[in-house]
Image (cartoon, rainbow, N blue to C red; front, side, top):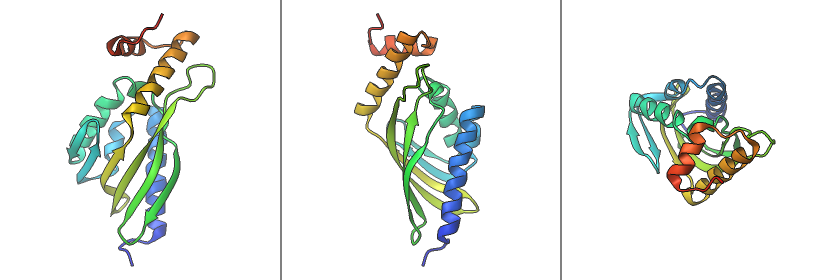
Length: 167
């Protein structure tokens, strides 16, 4: 038997998802770190390993205020599984860009593993996604935004840095 009941793990994960929805609306990414213990570890394969709530806060605020993060307000979860014995939640989140103006969806999944620490807090999260799929999605989003006349200055700058032709 696990340390926490399935209901507590499910409730904590649901709260985590709802906090992220609120952050996507308010853009207060500092709140994201408040879901973790003071000594939490967050592993993001492209950015590295962050130790402690404040390191997580610094990283997430910077990342989500830099393109393409600036245009990625939605992270719907398509499925999750709970390991009650160990206190883990494993899930798939979609990293979804904002609507470029035609209703098209531009997203790529990542797998996340979260370790529950009690009291609604997480002590560990690791995200894994395939950058070979993620970057073509971002490019498609930029090209669609350009075609629709909704591309941001940051999107133009990012495309130029990547060497993508926007003609």
